[in-house]
Length: 240
Image 1 (cartoon, rainbow, N blue to C red):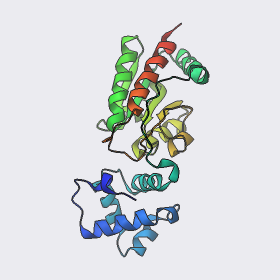
Image 2: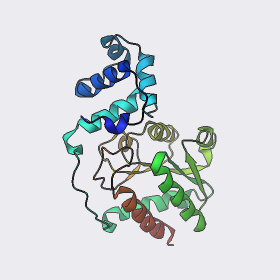
Image 3: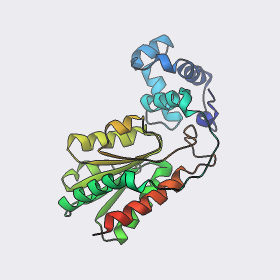
Image 4: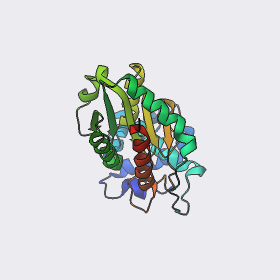
C-alpha cells in the first residue's frame, strides 16, 4: 500500500511510521477492533494513535482507518482517467422530485449545505447558485462553529452534504445529527459503499476514477462532473 499520499510533507517520528505501517498492513484484520486493543498490541497508547491521525490531517483514528481500508480494497485501485459528462436524468428524476417536495413543505426553513476540503469549494458554489435563485440557503464548512447547525436544527429543511470518499468523519457526524432530528439529508459522493450512504435520505453518486487521491493531486473529473450535476439539479429544482 502506497502511503506517500498521506505522509508527504508531514513530520512523523519513527514510532509514528511504525504505527502507520502496522495499521496499513493489518487494516483488513482491524475492523471492529477497539483502539485500546490496537494500542496495546503496538505497546503504545490510544492517544498516541489519535495524535498520529491528526498529524495526517484526519479528525481521529476512525477516519484514518477508513482511509486505509478504502486504499486496501481492490475495487479502489487506480484506473485510467476518462471523462463522462452525461447526466442520468431519468434515474435521478425521482430524487429531485423528493427534494422539491421537502422544500415545498418547508419553505420557511433553510436548505443547509455542509462540506470540508475541496468539496467545500463546490458546496459554496451550490450555495450561491441557490441564493441567486431566491432559495433560502445556509453554507457551513469545517472552519465554522458546529453550533451553526446544532442551534438552528428547527430551521433546517434539509441538509446537503458532499463527501468524495463518503468517509469524512465531520460530514458523517453532521448526518447523524440530522438523522436524530429527522432532518432529510442529501448526499453527493463518489463512493456508494461508504458509511455516509447509510445515513443519507437521498444519494447522488458521481463516478470517482481516483478514489485513492484524497489530497486531490492528480487529474480527476469527479468535481467537474459534480458541478455539472448540480447545475442540472438546480435547474430542475427551481422549475415550478
